[in-house]
Image 1: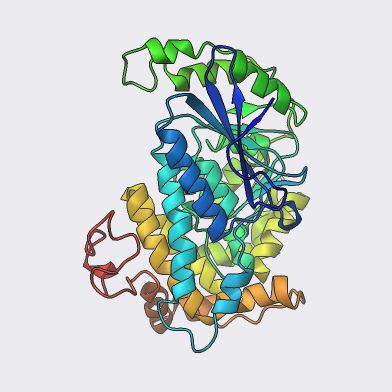
Image 2: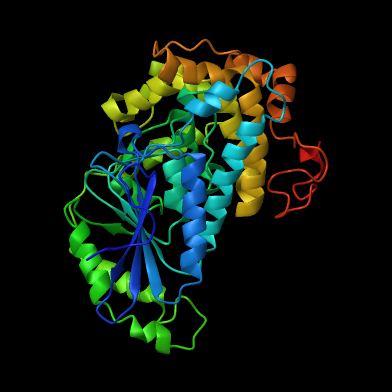
Length: 412
């Protein structure tokens, strides 16, 4: 029987419960509970998750946590940006107070998850996009299913691949992360395994079996061990890994990234952003890439998304991908805060949300072409997104880093 931890009224945006293990410990269950919005992540949800993580961190009975989404369509389809859109008026100050609240709570949650001392297990079934990808990246053990579909589609709304995307996209092999950021390409569970966003392939019907395996594990070994090494044989991390590895491996759709890693690598190394754009805009140039890359409907959809997408987003994505090479997670999130708050003050983000979610005409009028972004004046405009917009000492993540932690080029 599941024991309630918080108010589990159906309207609560996040539900918390525990499952008792056979040896007297607890498995914490966190369920994103806004299925009508595909469990889109809000400020309140971030706050609730953070508070519960802190509470369970201090509870020695809780040995591992599972994060899942309500409904059968999505784990989390991104951030809840409707209220953010409403805050982006022409008279909103820079930095926009609500944008600061929205992104700082979200990014603080990701950091908390990355450095959490207990196993965080993602049930990654269904749609995972944007903010959901940030949650996915922050978990220590990620399960995907035959229904998993993930993407970073921010180029369609004039934002950029945030939610720590600048960090995890840069770490994907063969520059596949840059391709995903520029094109918003939709990927499957096998793709997630390939790019180190998941570790285990299970069937979408296996959730109860997974919970049962966790409950039957010998958690007493954790209490008896004096090791501080989370990868020690008797650590909670190792116990979770053994339990998940014991579940039969499910058959997932073929990985598109595995099939086309070579032409993607060719494309992403074809030169500057202008050179990459020239190939993506040319059917003839795409056809010259090997292995039938241009003929696949998956590729065609990704290319069409890029061509219809926001040029400023493309420039920001390319710039962040290269700036994040040597940055820590905290530095990336600090920098993403700067960029996100500038996006909330500039026209393309609001226009992209209007076209996709408000008027739903899917015909955004972007403020600049890519050629404009690559001009001298356009480069200054893009660079300004990286600069700290807050007065000295007032950056919302400033308790992590000093104002000059990223170098003078990012200081107001």
